Amino acid sequence: MRFKSLFRLSVSLAIAFGGFSPAASATPPSERIVTPNAAPVQTAVENAVPFNPAAPAQPEEGKVVNFTLEAKRANLEVAPGVVKEVWTFNGQVPSPTLRVHQGDTVHFMLINKDPEMAHGLDFHAGQMDMGTYHKPINPGESVTFDWKAEYPGVFYYHCSADPVIMHIANGMFGAVIVDPPGYKPTGKEYVLIQNEWYDNSTNLQSLLEDTPKAVAFNGVASQYVSNPLTADPGERVRFYFVNAGINHFSAFHVIGTIFDQVMLDGNPKNTLYGVQTVAVPPGGTVVTDLYADTGTYAILTHSMKDATKGGLGILKVGNPDSGESNQAATKPLPNTSSPSPSAQPGTDAGTSTNQPADNTAATGEHTIHLTSLFAFSPSTLTVKAGTTVTWVNDDSTIHTVVGDTFDSRNEKKDGLGKGDTFSYTFNTPGTYPYHCTMHPFMTGTVIVK
Image (cartoon, rainbow, N blue to C red; front, top):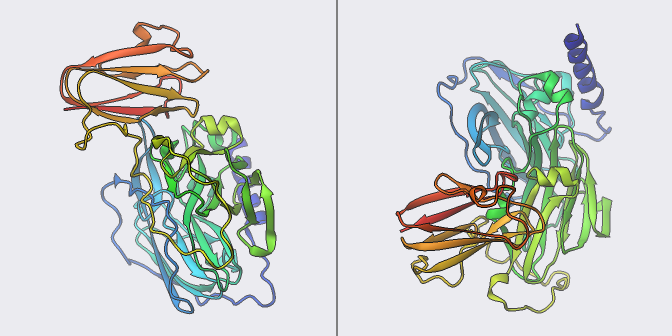
């Protein structure tokens, strides 16, 4: 009976808070059309498609924007060594980012290829009767309708099928960017969506009572520590930040910087200036702009327990490993900056800058540092057979270095304290992944040639 009462409570809360009373000027969506037997259901679960954190390009203004999502299952490594079968739109977590201009019409189609359950869609960017448009569709069905983006900003979208908390907890969420009139992107623009992963995400009781085992930006815990997001010195960096929840507030912060401006919900009318940390509730969003000099800057939720569980990444500006200093970052004059070539996030794995052109270090001894950012630096090191690698803990926190063929705990049972070292000689070619058992999101790889 308790489970049933909790279920009824979750549904009543969804009804109470999920609805929206549209303004008188809101354009009603077009007719909702459901087509049975629109597509065959999924027969095999494949690996998830990686999410691209770079914001999509602006579409042509004043056109109908087509947006199609397919509900399907996928396998995703949500943290090092932890693979979950997740529920997705288009086989990825987060789902694809939709970008439109304010006033554009979105022609939306949802195709349910999940063989086991119904799915629906709740667009926070739209204004529509939830009883009609958020209604889920059954396996094999599709639904279409048109809606208009009336307000600028960045908005959350998620599956609307009951229990909503479970569908979100299993990965069915994404972002909509609605650009205000006259806005032209400059610098770097990244989409960051924070979410929580639970051990038993298909048990409603667990989602209501348990604590998350991992917290992630864009679906994978700490993925941007070993594969940093990048920018040029003095370049504007814009984050479209969404908190998918399901339960925790985010305290969005970038260590070593101050947000030049913050737009709550991404609406220019809600602009704050000189903000250090911004609170983003579950289901909430924010747009932040910053400028930084050459260096390494931690992106995190300042709810430290969630940062430690994986709500942490790195923004790498310029080439801090070169030892060269750039002129202090300054805000560009209005209308004088132009877009710079987009850096591919995740291309710099932190490999040694002193390696030969073939990226294979010579034999001898090489050092990997355990940093205060809970990361191995470099995270990937390529060496020749016969090389001795030494790990040095520069952090005041205790860590371990554990792979299939080596284990620092054999020498330091309680872990490596600050200044402690551990060495291993790699005599056999191959790929050697390793991690810190105390902080499993800390991962690294030694490649031996």
